[in-house]
Image 1 (cartoon, rainbow, N blue to C red):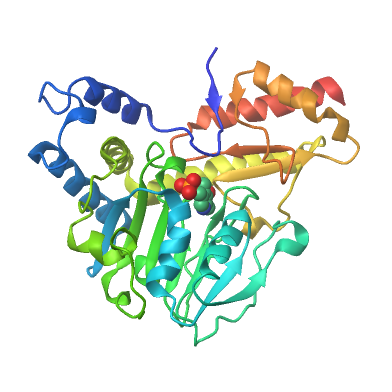
Image 2: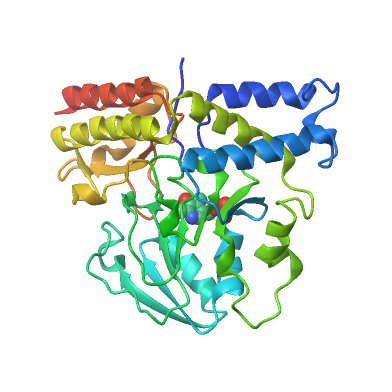
Length: 357
Ligand SMILES: *Cc1c(COP(=O)(O)O)cnc(C)c1O
């Protein structure tokens, strides 16, 4: 049976990424040896790194003055690396979910943290609005897409201080005005590559403003100066990321991806709103994520949760169980998820309604 992969992360990647990476595991770039066994200083791998950085810049339309880094440690290491490099006295954070909270916790190790607004009062089911970003903060940190709660900031906000964004789960899902951000970072395992590589897009001139000593590996300058090759980069995940970036370009780039993503998410949200057995957990349509769609059983049907999960699993749906802090269901609609998988899930919901009403 065909499987429809809705996992939130690690998650679905384009078939071509898997095929090309599998090939390279056996014979990389005609060298006769594996991508796992070749020096990262070889000309073949250096070419991979350079093309990946170049395509990243091209696809996101990154202006001059920014570097693209591929680091280890996951997005979670960035939670500490950002304040280590940028926080002198005070940083401002928007608290929109579990990942924001983890980022806030790390920043507190380095200075004052001003949480300008939070949606925790309603289990992070909305994006706070009307908050004021303090002008004396060293930077303002946001999580653009809340993978667990299914909310998303789908626009590029103006900030009087350097804007830092965790885009782990919505990178390349829409066009971004990179010039409004000082740092964009994320774990690659949601929309780009296998786990093991973290992307960091950083404006070079924001560095050098803190007094503390920074360990070499946690200093962005180290990696900028060495073109992300100071130490051994995650060679295989970077290779896979390059295949996804090439695929993205061939698909028509981020603008076209966004058009498809809006269509996929729109169809599923329409069904959730229409189907009497389900309801969305994010009420405000402007705040609904186009990447992670969260929904639960509607009032009166709560006892059918397991039955629907079993039914959907029997029809080939994989990874639709909601995160334990929200419950219900979560369908992650990353770039590589085909339209037919969304259609299959919708058909499943309709059939379940017919059988159970
Ligand atoms: C998955 C995720 C993270 C954590 O990424 P790791 O690479 O596992 O550290 C951070 N932020 C967001 C928004 C995520 O979705």
